[in-house]
Image (tube, rainbow, N blue to C red; front, side, top):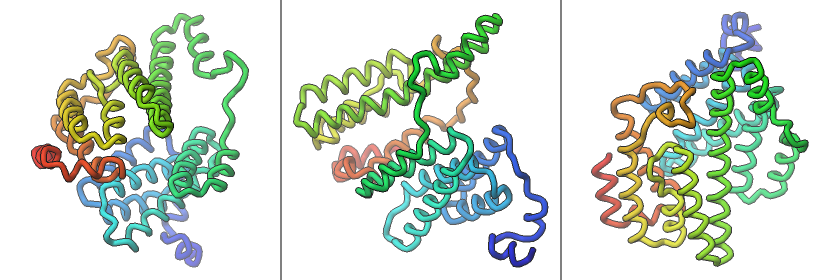
Length: 307
């Protein structure tokens, strides 16, 4: 037992007392604590806390997957000056994704595989990405086989309308994120093909869809901003960035939307908008296509004002 404990980086008490399964609510509580530790104490202490919790629940693939997402998000805001340390965290994140990708839970397995595929594509490891894609669960091909939609129909037959609506509202948010990613990628493809007019039209469609579906920002300009960044159009970027920052002030709760009236949302912290602005502006220094903005005085002023 002591030898096994040393191998796993834990102690005998933990080995004897760990809990096999965690409920979704227990996982959510742990993730909130992990995120708070990362924000308050920084990446190193945050990682140590996450590693400790993962040792306590070594068989929970879902916790490992979401912990990897938290670490990846925290790593985005770190500079790569300390290359050895940066590579260590990247390997740890990859290890957690690989563990989660073996999950018997299809959703966790596919999400972990998707994260790994994204990384392989970024690194130009095409064959490895193809092999990982083959491991993902294929969606049902037969019409009407969507489990959530069938469950909603069942709720309706039982006159449990609120349950049916809540299920479909959650599905709509998920599909909106899916459509968002598709439209942004189609816009980038049109640019690569030098079809500027088509790229502009797709960007407009993206922003209209987001606004019609009442998703997050009252007056979305994210696709137009992405298009301007791809074209290195500094003037357009400054104008759209200003509009996006102003639109954050108008964010409303999801439950205030007719489409999502059955969803329960937590009350946003008082500094939610301020933190959202900071996070959005920080991403400008991380993504290769937006780094040029940090050299523009007007953008530098926006970052300093909201830092």
